[in-house]
Length: 481
Image: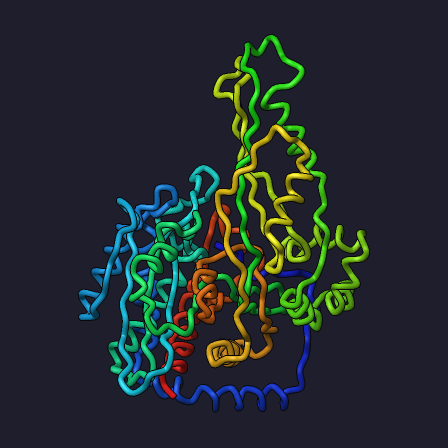
């Protein structure tokens, strides 16, 4: 993934008159009456216990990408569906790269299907930087530790439990519900959601909504915030290759492949892409403004004005880099390759760039700007990944249901449509006009968010239990009207 919705700290407490909170909660509960009725058919405590147990099993299956090995988790889900008597399909896009999906059919309606999507692969974890084995699913002090607890195996399990609960309770459905777990999201999904959509379009037949990763809740002191991801910056990845004459390291030339590459990368490192505020980002900042720290309240309310002040942008980059990244295109230098031997000047040196574009960016114009910033004609620029932009509306029943369920459980939380700096598989669906939302029903302490792609990734067992209930309420509200 997939970054969670950006958070900010040092928030002040926002108080609301008791009568307003009570009135708002009454309205929310009334809207959720069908979901509440459906939930009464489910032993929620048992479902929550099952979720905890299954997450532990899931974490112990090492699906580090590369190589992925998602066929192992594909079989994990396949065994569950077989035991429950739910028809399912599996497909491998390459050896070891498994995908799995199952569908509950509507019984009394023809509303667009709801897809519960998650990915099975995880990023690498170096055990020497963890306090526990990242694949042992260690429970300690009320937390479950392991690679994938936040990104995004826990979400996959709470989606699974909601799916199974509907099946077991024989809840009448007015739309199909599709559970899907895919491979390769962490590397662009060429073997996962993108491949399934191209080779097995029947898996998504009739889909109108997707619930996926990319948003969720974070807490910092008294402040609680939930972001429902509606769009994301667009990833474009590039390889830069410089060439030169190889020779012995004791005889440095005036120009070498490595020197050319370093010069170009330094120019890029010091280059500033022009800041600008697109409508979705403007709406996001305005949503954050009411509960923002005093020094940022006015700034967030008018980001178009704020970005005209270089000092304000620098402060935002220092204090809240994830939010700052939403104000401009960015490029990060992430991979460097030169000589494999210390005393050899190599004939070739290369680097990889992770660039993230604002959704309205003209791509050819960006590529031209990148080449100008590098200012090294001898360097070859090769695109290795690129997606298309899209935004999902906040005016539909899934978005409103997410807000209602979240408000019922966290009445004092700010809930805003979010823009993600990271990318997820949602873009495959948005490209086809399917409304897709990034949302995980967990309230994560701000300090724990560093575990996403970082060390000591963990989630509290309380979050697992509450998230299991919230996911069931969201899904049952969507299928029971």
